[in-house]
Amino acid sequence: MNTQNIRTLSTQETRLLNALSVAGKTVFTVEDAQAAANGQGANLLRLLSSLARKRWLLRLERGKYLILPLAAGMEGLYTAHEFVLASRLVDPYAIGYWSALHYHGFTEQLPHTVTVISPARRRNVAIADLGFRCQFVAVAPERFFGLITVLIEDQPVVITDPARTVVDCLDRPDLCGGIVEAAKGLAGYARRADAPPARLAEYATRLGNQAIVKRLGYLAEQLDLPARFPDAGWAAAMADWQRGLSAGFARLDPRLPAAGPYDRNWRLRLNVPPEQLLGWMET
Image (tube, rainbow, N blue to C red; front, side):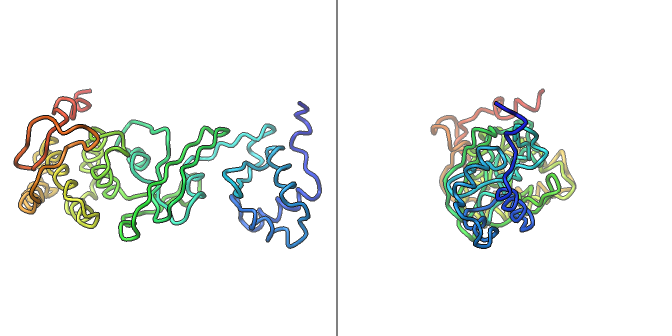
């Protein structure tokens, strides 16, 4: 392969890339390319195919492309942050669950898949050339809240805030690596200065899943949060949560079978033993 010529552009290709760049289209659709070409892009699909073959474009999915920057080098290797790439795939969106848990510093485990929540439904995306995988979790519009915008590589990225991240993980431990990772998330949240316990209960109520509060109270008790953070209001919050518990027992980790003893204070089936749940605290 002639590496000197692999990324050489024709005049027509140069014009299209320049027009897309001026329009701020790092990720674009075929329709965007048609608009950028201003009706001058004859054989547009062939042009896009040529640019992809030369590694100036990366095909993300049918009809959607990513412009590979000059910094990608002669071979067109793209190294942008995975959250930035995920942010271009659906709108509206927010990085969530295990991905957000790691971003906020609540777990040392680095997930191999970016998890994105959105009111819009769409298929998961895997881009082998980048080693990139993105999982989309559809949420009802009324459950699309608790979001913040952060800068990653100077690009704005929407992500669930610390409280929403913890509550989501208690709601769906299967999307954060299990209840042990959710417990790490709660411990990390409690260490923050701006971490009122009441916000967790507020978010749990808005999500409409009483099992969240049961897991939240039990984990706060196991982590001894009232004693470790006596001025944060954990004791009063936990007493309030306990008074409002719904009837019936939920599983501590809903991924696992209904086994183990019952905790009647928090109305949980303890299908994960305490030594496994909190073993990470000893290391």
